[in-house]
Amino acid sequence: VSWLEKTKETVASEAVKHVKDGFIVGLGSGSTAAYAIKELGRLICQDKIQVKGIPSSSQAKKLAVNAGIPLTTLDEHPLIDLVIDGADEVDKELNMIKGGGGALTREKIIASASKQVVIIADEKKFVEKLGSTFKVPIEVLDFAFVTVFKEIEDLGGLPVLREGNGKVGPVVTDNGNYIIDVDFGPINKIKDLNQELKLLPGVIETGLFIDLADIVYLGKRDQITKLEK
Ligand code: A5P
Image (cartoon, rainbow, N blue to C red; front, side, top):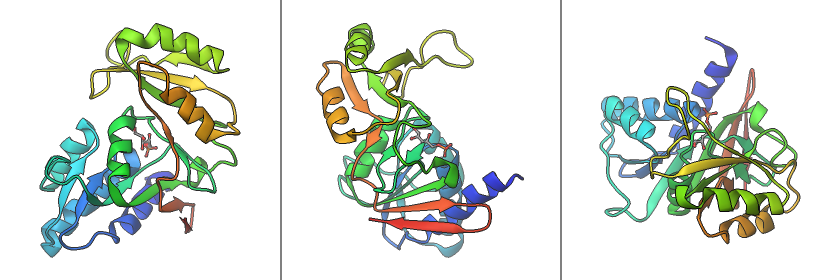
């Protein structure tokens, strides 16, 4: 097992320590969040704590079912106690780019509905400025994607329609929409950019997660750094 996989597992275990008996827990997506789901399942089975999960994607749902985590919905629990999720980039203000796994919309809804958001990632995700190493994923209605493409170019971005592996053509999200990955370069005014993008008709959600994370555990080769709001 590589140090990277080990570190993902370590930060995931650290995050799961925030889970208390009776909690409703938002389950993030991606390879790091997958370790947290596994660990939470172990805790539920071994320590018999009462926890219910709300998955942010079909991936998280499948992993949670396999791990033995009872599931619930936002309809039943519109207020969540804790979300554990990964990230694609994190800055020192704990703002993030997410959506590498295409689950950004549900992830953002769950994070916004949660009292506490704990993010887990390896140190390579930490950047001075968002947009330096990762494009901004944007979920769009397929009907609107060409128009949105043009408007994003007018905003100075370089958009690419996300295409799948194992299927020709665009990736279709769990919500039935397309994903556009946009290269804006290092972003100076993330709040302004997020607002401009959200105002484009056809844009469902952006992968810019601003003021949502409370704690970030960054895994390094031999230690974990905890960043807090
Ligand atoms: C999923 O849509 C993303 O927001 C993930 O949180 C992100 O891609 C992190 O994934 P890894 O933990 O696999 O890097």
